Image (tube, rainbow, N blue to C red; front, side, top):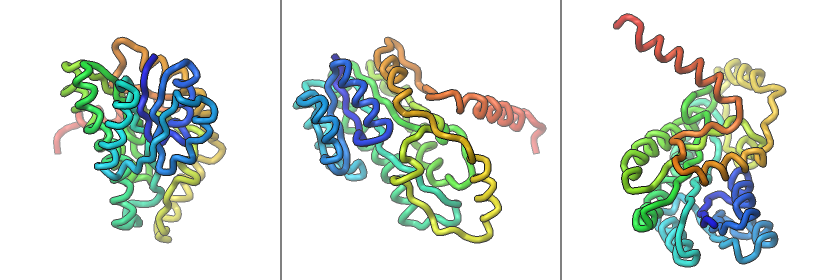
Length: 263
Protein backbone atom coordinates (compact mmCIF):
# COMPACT_ATOMS: atom_id res chain seq x y z
CA UNK A 1 0.00 0.00 0.00
CA UNK A 2 1.31 3.42 -0.99
CA UNK A 3 0.43 6.84 0.37
CA UNK A 4 -0.07 9.66 -2.12
CA UNK A 5 -0.20 13.45 -1.96
CA UNK A 6 -1.94 14.86 -5.04
CA UNK A 7 -2.53 18.51 -5.85
CA UNK A 8 -5.44 19.46 -8.08
CA UNK A 9 -7.19 16.21 -7.18
CA UNK A 10 -10.77 17.33 -7.76
CA UNK A 11 -10.74 16.95 -11.55
CA UNK A 12 -8.71 15.96 -14.58
CA UNK A 13 -5.67 13.76 -14.13
CA UNK A 14 -5.57 14.42 -10.38
CA UNK A 15 -9.04 12.95 -9.85
CA UNK A 16 -8.38 10.01 -12.19
CA UNK A 17 -5.11 9.03 -10.54
CA UNK A 18 -6.46 9.53 -7.02
CA UNK A 19 -9.38 7.22 -7.77
CA UNK A 20 -7.09 4.62 -9.36
CA UNK A 21 -4.78 4.61 -6.34
CA UNK A 22 -7.69 4.39 -3.91
CA UNK A 23 -9.40 1.64 -5.88
CA UNK A 24 -6.37 -0.63 -5.42
CA UNK A 25 -6.16 0.05 -1.68
CA UNK A 26 -3.70 2.94 -1.46
CA UNK A 27 -4.30 6.04 0.68
CA UNK A 28 -4.44 9.54 -0.78
CA UNK A 29 -4.09 13.04 0.62
CA UNK A 30 -6.14 14.86 -2.01
CA UNK A 31 -5.92 18.63 -2.27
CA UNK A 32 -8.00 21.27 -4.01
CA UNK A 33 -8.65 24.98 -3.56
CA UNK A 34 -12.19 24.09 -2.48
CA UNK A 35 -12.22 20.83 -0.48
CA UNK A 36 -15.95 20.42 -1.17
CA UNK A 37 -15.01 19.45 -4.73
CA UNK A 38 -13.28 16.38 -3.26
CA UNK A 39 -16.57 15.01 -1.90
CA UNK A 40 -16.99 12.38 -4.65
CA UNK A 41 -13.66 10.82 -3.67
CA UNK A 42 -14.51 10.92 0.03
CA UNK A 43 -17.96 9.44 -0.58
CA UNK A 44 -16.49 6.61 -2.62
CA UNK A 45 -13.42 5.77 -0.53
CA UNK A 46 -14.10 7.11 2.97
CA UNK A 47 -11.22 7.24 5.41
CA UNK A 48 -8.70 6.26 2.74
CA UNK A 49 -8.96 9.86 1.52
CA UNK A 50 -7.57 12.82 3.43
CA UNK A 51 -9.20 15.89 1.81
CA UNK A 52 -7.21 19.09 2.19
CA UNK A 53 -7.77 22.68 1.11
CA UNK A 54 -4.71 24.03 -0.68
CA UNK A 55 -3.90 26.94 -2.94
CA UNK A 56 -0.48 25.86 -4.20
CA UNK A 57 0.60 29.46 -4.80
CA UNK A 58 0.67 29.92 -1.00
CA UNK A 59 4.06 28.57 0.06
CA UNK A 60 3.24 28.51 3.78
CA UNK A 61 0.00 26.63 3.10
CA UNK A 62 1.82 24.12 0.88
CA UNK A 63 4.32 23.31 3.63
CA UNK A 64 1.53 22.97 6.20
CA UNK A 65 -0.56 20.69 3.97
CA UNK A 66 2.34 18.37 3.16
CA UNK A 67 3.38 18.16 6.81
CA UNK A 68 -0.21 17.48 7.91
CA UNK A 69 -0.58 14.73 5.30
CA UNK A 70 2.68 13.05 6.32
CA UNK A 71 1.71 13.17 9.99
CA UNK A 72 -1.78 11.77 9.41
CA UNK A 73 -0.76 9.10 6.91
CA UNK A 74 2.55 8.16 8.50
CA UNK A 75 4.64 8.64 5.36
CA UNK A 76 4.48 9.86 1.76
CA UNK A 77 5.42 7.54 -1.06
CA UNK A 78 4.16 9.44 -4.12
CA UNK A 79 3.84 13.22 -4.41
CA UNK A 80 2.01 14.41 -7.52
CA UNK A 81 2.27 18.05 -8.60
CA UNK A 82 -0.79 18.17 -10.82
CA UNK A 83 -2.37 21.56 -10.05
CA UNK A 84 -2.20 23.88 -13.05
CA UNK A 85 -4.08 25.49 -15.89
CA UNK A 86 -3.60 26.86 -19.39
CA UNK A 87 -3.17 30.52 -20.33
CA UNK A 88 -4.24 30.91 -23.97
CA UNK A 89 -3.07 33.89 -25.97
CA UNK A 90 -0.16 35.48 -27.78
CA UNK A 91 2.88 36.53 -25.77
CA UNK A 92 2.23 40.21 -26.53
CA UNK A 93 -1.36 39.92 -25.30
CA UNK A 94 -0.61 38.55 -21.82
CA UNK A 95 -1.00 41.03 -19.01
CA UNK A 96 1.49 41.15 -16.16
CA UNK A 97 -1.15 39.72 -13.84
CA UNK A 98 -1.90 36.84 -16.21
CA UNK A 99 1.77 36.04 -16.80
CA UNK A 100 2.65 36.07 -13.11
CA UNK A 101 -0.40 34.01 -12.15
CA UNK A 102 0.50 31.36 -14.74
CA UNK A 103 4.01 30.98 -13.35
CA UNK A 104 2.80 31.17 -9.73
CA UNK A 105 0.52 28.16 -10.18
CA UNK A 106 2.21 25.95 -12.77
CA UNK A 107 5.82 26.47 -11.68
CA UNK A 108 6.07 28.01 -8.23
CA UNK A 109 3.16 25.94 -6.90
CA UNK A 110 5.00 22.76 -7.89
CA UNK A 111 8.23 24.14 -6.45
CA UNK A 112 6.67 24.88 -3.05
CA UNK A 113 5.10 21.41 -2.75
CA UNK A 114 8.37 19.84 -3.89
CA UNK A 115 10.38 21.75 -1.31
CA UNK A 116 7.88 20.83 1.39
CA UNK A 117 7.98 17.13 0.52
CA UNK A 118 11.73 16.67 0.10
CA UNK A 119 12.73 16.68 3.80
CA UNK A 120 10.12 13.98 4.42
CA UNK A 121 11.20 11.86 1.44
CA UNK A 122 14.88 12.25 2.31
CA UNK A 123 14.23 11.16 5.91
CA UNK A 124 12.43 8.08 4.57
CA UNK A 125 15.32 7.39 2.16
CA UNK A 126 12.73 7.03 -0.58
CA UNK A 127 9.75 8.42 -2.40
CA UNK A 128 8.66 9.46 -5.86
CA UNK A 129 7.85 12.94 -7.15
CA UNK A 130 5.59 13.09 -10.20
CA UNK A 131 5.78 16.50 -11.88
CA UNK A 132 2.89 16.90 -14.32
CA UNK A 133 4.36 18.68 -17.32
CA UNK A 134 3.08 18.37 -20.88
CA UNK A 135 4.17 17.95 -24.44
CA UNK A 136 4.17 21.73 -24.00
CA UNK A 137 7.13 21.28 -21.66
CA UNK A 138 9.35 20.06 -24.50
CA UNK A 139 7.72 21.61 -27.58
CA UNK A 140 6.15 25.03 -28.20
CA UNK A 141 3.12 26.17 -30.16
CA UNK A 142 1.70 29.63 -30.90
CA UNK A 143 -0.95 30.95 -28.49
CA UNK A 144 0.62 29.15 -25.50
CA UNK A 145 3.85 31.06 -24.87
CA UNK A 146 3.33 31.75 -21.16
CA UNK A 147 2.03 28.24 -20.52
CA UNK A 148 5.18 26.89 -22.18
CA UNK A 149 7.30 29.18 -20.02
CA UNK A 150 5.77 27.64 -16.90
CA UNK A 151 6.23 24.04 -18.06
CA UNK A 152 9.74 24.54 -19.46
CA UNK A 153 10.70 26.01 -16.09
CA UNK A 154 9.23 22.95 -14.36
CA UNK A 155 11.15 20.65 -16.71
CA UNK A 156 14.49 22.33 -16.10
CA UNK A 157 14.04 22.47 -12.34
CA UNK A 158 12.92 18.84 -12.15
CA UNK A 159 15.74 17.55 -14.35
CA UNK A 160 18.30 19.16 -12.04
CA UNK A 161 16.37 17.98 -8.99
CA UNK A 162 16.45 14.37 -10.17
CA UNK A 163 20.25 14.53 -10.26
CA UNK A 164 20.36 16.09 -6.79
CA UNK A 165 18.04 13.67 -4.98
CA UNK A 166 18.56 10.45 -6.94
CA UNK A 167 21.61 9.49 -4.84
CA UNK A 168 19.44 10.02 -1.74
CA UNK A 169 16.86 7.47 -2.87
CA UNK A 170 14.23 9.93 -4.12
CA UNK A 171 12.93 9.49 -7.67
CA UNK A 172 11.58 12.21 -9.98
CA UNK A 173 9.46 11.71 -13.10
CA UNK A 174 8.20 14.38 -15.48
CA UNK A 175 4.84 13.17 -16.78
CA UNK A 176 4.27 14.67 -20.24
CA UNK A 177 0.73 14.12 -21.55
CA UNK A 178 -0.46 14.85 -25.03
CA UNK A 179 -4.00 16.18 -25.56
CA UNK A 180 -6.59 14.65 -23.25
CA UNK A 181 -10.21 15.46 -22.57
CA UNK A 182 -9.65 17.36 -19.32
CA UNK A 183 -10.95 20.87 -18.73
CA UNK A 184 -7.45 22.33 -19.23
CA UNK A 185 -8.70 24.23 -22.28
CA UNK A 186 -12.20 24.63 -20.86
CA UNK A 187 -13.48 25.86 -17.52
CA UNK A 188 -10.05 26.15 -15.90
CA UNK A 189 -8.42 28.06 -18.78
CA UNK A 190 -7.62 31.78 -18.88
CA UNK A 191 -7.64 33.66 -22.18
CA UNK A 192 -6.03 36.93 -23.18
CA UNK A 193 -7.74 39.83 -24.91
CA UNK A 194 -6.94 39.27 -28.60
CA UNK A 195 -4.96 41.69 -30.76
CA UNK A 196 -6.40 41.74 -34.27
CA UNK A 197 -3.01 41.51 -36.00
CA UNK A 198 -2.58 37.96 -34.70
CA UNK A 199 -5.94 36.66 -35.94
CA UNK A 200 -4.49 34.76 -38.96
CA UNK A 201 -2.11 32.91 -36.64
CA UNK A 202 -4.88 32.21 -34.18
CA UNK A 203 -7.15 30.91 -36.95
CA UNK A 204 -4.41 28.63 -38.30
CA UNK A 205 -3.97 27.21 -34.82
CA UNK A 206 -7.72 26.61 -34.49
CA UNK A 207 -7.85 24.95 -37.88
CA UNK A 208 -4.95 22.68 -37.03
CA UNK A 209 -6.70 21.50 -33.89
CA UNK A 210 -10.09 21.10 -35.54
CA UNK A 211 -11.51 17.61 -35.29
CA UNK A 212 -8.83 16.38 -32.86
CA UNK A 213 -10.63 15.07 -29.80
CA UNK A 214 -8.71 14.67 -26.57
CA UNK A 215 -8.23 11.13 -25.31
CA UNK A 216 -10.02 9.87 -22.22
CA UNK A 217 -7.99 10.85 -19.10
CA UNK A 218 -9.04 7.59 -17.44
CA UNK A 219 -6.89 5.73 -19.99
CA UNK A 220 -3.76 7.07 -18.24
CA UNK A 221 -4.47 5.47 -14.85
CA UNK A 222 -2.86 2.08 -15.52
CA UNK A 223 0.33 3.67 -16.89
CA UNK A 224 0.69 5.93 -13.85
CA UNK A 225 0.20 3.03 -11.45
CA UNK A 226 2.90 1.07 -13.32
CA UNK A 227 5.12 4.13 -13.13
CA UNK A 228 4.92 4.50 -9.36
CA UNK A 229 5.43 0.76 -8.88
CA UNK A 230 8.52 0.62 -11.11
CA UNK A 231 11.77 -0.05 -9.21
CA UNK A 232 13.66 2.33 -11.52
CA UNK A 233 11.13 4.84 -12.89
CA UNK A 234 12.15 6.99 -15.87
CA UNK A 235 12.85 10.70 -15.64
CA UNK A 236 10.30 11.38 -18.39
CA UNK A 237 7.11 9.63 -19.46
CA UNK A 238 4.90 10.57 -22.40
CA UNK A 239 1.21 9.78 -22.00
CA UNK A 240 -0.50 8.93 -25.27
CA UNK A 241 0.89 8.45 -28.77
CA UNK A 242 0.46 12.06 -29.88
CA UNK A 243 3.78 13.47 -28.54
CA UNK A 244 6.19 11.00 -30.17
CA UNK A 245 6.14 12.08 -33.85
CA UNK A 246 6.14 15.75 -32.86
CA UNK A 247 9.16 15.37 -30.59
CA UNK A 248 11.05 13.14 -33.04
CA UNK A 249 10.64 15.76 -35.76
CA UNK A 250 11.48 18.60 -33.39
CA UNK A 251 14.72 17.04 -32.18
CA UNK A 252 15.82 16.18 -35.70
CA UNK A 253 15.32 19.84 -36.62
CA UNK A 254 17.20 21.04 -33.53
CA UNK A 255 20.15 18.74 -34.19
CA UNK A 256 20.27 19.87 -37.81
CA UNK A 257 20.28 23.51 -36.67
CA UNK A 258 23.04 22.96 -34.14
CA UNK A 259 25.13 21.05 -36.69
CA UNK A 260 24.75 23.69 -39.39
CA UNK A 261 27.68 25.97 -40.23
CA UNK A 262 28.35 28.61 -37.60
CA UNK A 263 27.17 32.10 -38.35
